[in-house]
Image (cartoon, rainbow, N blue to C red):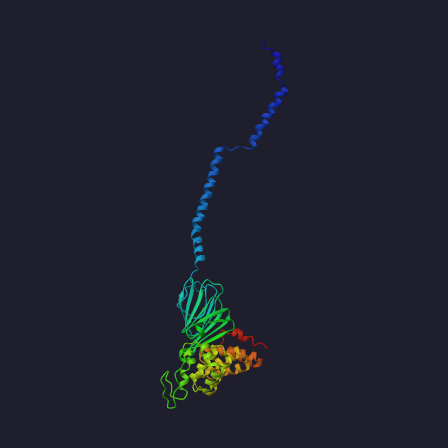
Length: 387
């Protein structure tokens, strides 16, 4: 039989109240942190992932051409352009700034044509006059400057090329260049900072005989029948004809060169003897026929060029700046070709300064700046203007 009293005792009020409080506490906690159904979270994560993938795909699509272009440009740099990104013209004039920070300064009377412009080389042709080149070192392309029978190759340096009827003059301020050509000693010479090379043209190196007393000219290459005629058949002349100057001087010897210089009667012979000695590395012997040419043939058009060449030998190789200053002044007075006048004026200033004649150097420098305000060597000359 069911005991009603015992059941009533088991249902104590305090126990019932504690239980109710626990239940309501749990309910209140759940209300404060509502739960999101699993289905909604899955949808949100999927949506975010889809957007991220789309963004990455769009960015890759947009940047692909730029990345491809960058890789292509790294592997194969574009052809040179002007500094303002305009295409390189077929002929360069004035002060030309290039896209690789190189610079070319072309004299007004000069002509410099662009022969080739690609990823590996820039080919230029100096038809006449003077041009100065400031090539940015470390570039991906080589520079080649053709000036008649002479070709100048360089990777990064500052140099100058002057071309005239008398020949081609190459001078280097910084770096080094290779000068090639049939008229260049051994067909190739390396010039470094401070070095210069003058390569006479064919008509200057082996000019025709001068006019005779009656005004007529002998045929080019004709040898007068004199007691000296057999000398022209000597071995050194055969070597000279092949531009082998070292062998020509070796065949002559120092005594033979001095003897032939004494026997020389015209400008052509003196030029040949000067070339043999100069291009074979014998500046003292080369100076002798040049001095004779200037002194004995002052009215010959080649006398001015001989004086200039003598000045360069005296200044660079013989350590005689006093004599060099006189030779440069003489070359200007004799009517040096336009292509070499600025170089001679600047060299005159340098020779005077190195000779200790600072006042004279200052006057010559002022004259240079007046005559060549945009001269390529103005910076070198102006240092002599300081008191």
